[in-house]
Amino acid sequence: MAAVYTYKFARELYTERVGLWAALLLLTAQHILICTMDVRAEPFLTGLIIASVYHFYKSLGKKWFWHLVIASVFAACAVMTKGIFALIPIGGAIGGHLLIKKNWKMVFNFRWLLAAVLIFIFILPELYTLYNQFDLHPDKVIFGRQGVSGIRFFFWDSQFGRFFNNGPIKKSSGDPTFFLHTILWAFLPWSLLFYTAVFQFFRQHFRKPVQAEWYCISGSLLTLLIFSLSKFQLPFYITIVFPFFTIICAQYLCNLKLESSVIAIRIMQLIVGGIMMFLIIALHYFFQPDNITVFSAFLLAGAVALFFVVTFYFDNDRYKVFFQVCTIAFFVNLYFNLAYYPRLVKYQADSEAAFWINTHNKQDLPVVRSRIGYAFALDFYLNAPLYFLTDGEQSFLPPKPYLLYADTELIDQYIKQGVKMKRLKTFESYRITKVNGKFLNHTARQGVLSATEVVLIN
Image 1 (tube, one colour):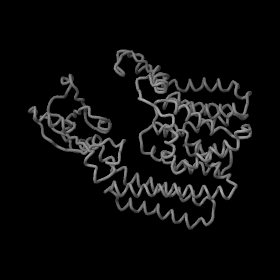
Image 2 (cartoon, helix red, strand yellow):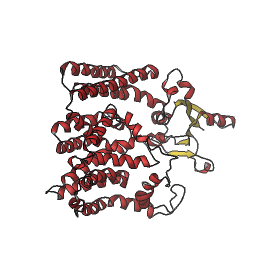
Image 3 (tube, one colour):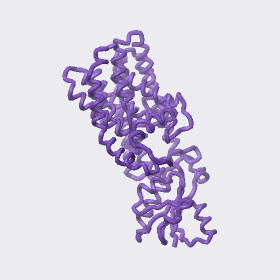
Image 4 (cartoon, helix red, strand yellow):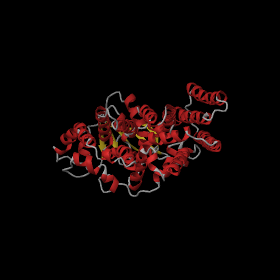
């Protein structure tokens, strides 16, 4: 959806070629590909936001009503997905362009009031459910207190609370340059191309802004500015403006005139692609995944073959190097999905424990887990009643026999206390969302692993 609307929007602003390149750059951007296998809201937001921007753009014309309605539907879906901050890139793109162009007639047009009303109407389903789930039940304990309003959390605490760092979910500090250096890896292999394109855009249009298109620049940079000022910063936030990034890059790429600039960009992209391949080779050497099947090897070999097909098919075409880099991105992410990620999740002990219990728990015994770290995957994947072992809640545990999932240190303590149990399965555990050099190095990995176990309490 994001790729389709990126193509449509870029085609409207520029040409079909720019639209096609923008879609291709989006589909090979690193964090977009990471998000396809990660459980985040941002992949949905990416499509919803650019779709809303496209239809709001179309609503600037004469046949505006239905485009305004459709744009408001997409905007409302984005708000219901992540909150009202999802309106920042939408408003930044449309409003920023109109303000810079000094199109005051359209800035103060009544249709934006109509759009606000429509968005509010379209988010009523979420407001209704939040009110029924929380506001009607002030006795519920949420974030350690009662009387929590779901509607207030939706409009304020979840959004502005994170921005000002005074809500129930807090982060210790923020780095104003966080997203600037995050883009360097998250938007690979096009990050340096993006910075070059932005620099050249301002170089050409800063003195005469009314002659340029500002939708993508204003939508992306306003979002970056607000996110950078926030203390709550996570790398996947940035993907929601990747469609803007790719349109900026594609427009710059397709309009390069000087041969010296074309050569410089080619060299830059070849260096970036070479670094990506070097890092994958180094990762494979140190991590040594042992799960590459014949099918996986065949697919990876196919990606390599595709690189050589592109190399020899495009003779002196100015876009040859970009197709080559696309195949490198294809290979890199095939490797991640076929070799690295499948081996990595074997160290996510809570999900592995859930899979093992689902297979071996023939008696459908209830499961108790101690609150060890980030064991949420056990809750998600387990096909059995789950209880939590905490101090002062022993009366809420199920009757024996039951299965206990806990770290080995706690199990050893129970054995010393004389608790009757049978050790069933041990799992190597690591918080895989925060890998480091020792974990990636197979020779040093054992030193950073911990152990969890499933035992039978009888």
